[in-house]
Image (cartoon, rainbow, N blue to C red; front, side, top):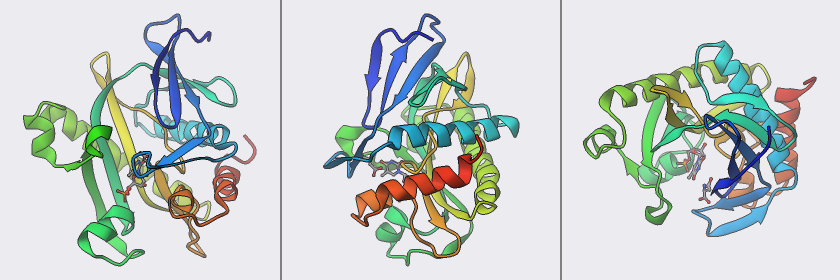
Length: 236
Ligand code: TMP
Ligand code: ASP
């Protein structure tokens, strides 16, 4: 699929139009940022690894009834996806206490939650992606109540599908951030699902295998991304 015009450049991806107005190409970069781009760096081969990991997850989700924007992986760094009208809400699902949940509520990192917690953040860099609730989403018109229900149901279903898949490969799904959008009246899961957007811990050692290694300067960043890739995509 021939790339045409660059329509979006984010911190980790570029998006290009194609000859088909319904389809766009996502190009995965090696650039990494944290703390709303106050920290910047590069993670060698991250784009290649995240493209492959995202493909694996999108195929698994589609096979289990979660509609996604995924069409096909075109090459090492590019994925063909359906063009979405993105809903400006980041939906976070948490299984184990970590990150901003631990910090905000003064909780100990690492404790399993009795059931998943869903949170919403307003996708707005200028405001540092503030946390919002269901009323902000619906009353301020980011999505209708019906759309938000679909988003929440699909986020929890995604969690239910990915958790055991990862655990079978020795990885705990601590939490993850998902984005959804509209495509011809349907809500589809979009963006990417990878070590940039999820927390993955080794199930035995609890070693962090995700972007927290970059955010917190823990070292062995590339190795962690490759380890997740090896466990999820071996043989593909
Ligand atoms: P948090 O604990 O920092 O709120 O992060 C929750 C999850 O969301 C974690 O898996 C990392 C992911 N995330 C992003 O994908 N993008 C972001 O900008 C942030 C802050 C978190
Ligand atoms: N997306 C964040 C940033 O703005 C990074 C993070 O994942 O923490 O730089």
